[in-house]
Amino acid sequence: MKSNSQISDQEELHKLGLKLKDLRMAKGFTDLNKFAQENNLDCSQYRKYEEGTADITISMLFYVLNIFNLSMNDFFNEDIPNKDEPFGR
Image (cartoon, rainbow, N blue to C red; front, side, top):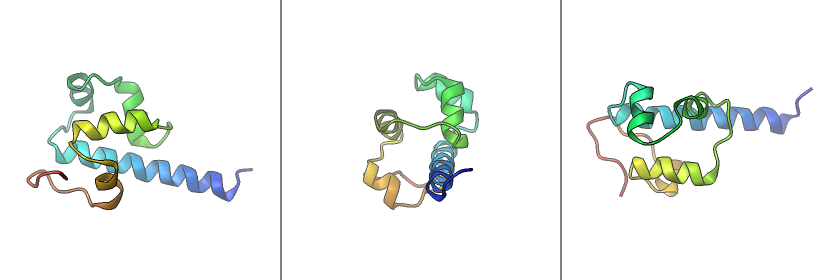
């Protein structure tokens, strides 16, 4: 049986993954494979991050946010803009 904190952690991973996916889509990358290839990411692992089924390391999150020109503060405190709006900074 899972504890409440484990369930909460899974829910938070899922939310983080959805936010990463929204960022990618807002940047105009509808094809995850193309996005991963162009940004030197392992496609299958990145897919798991977006699905919220794999833990993402802080260093990988920094790497991905750098692709989107976002700081950690921007990522955790701002809504994702639509594809026509500029990202943070």
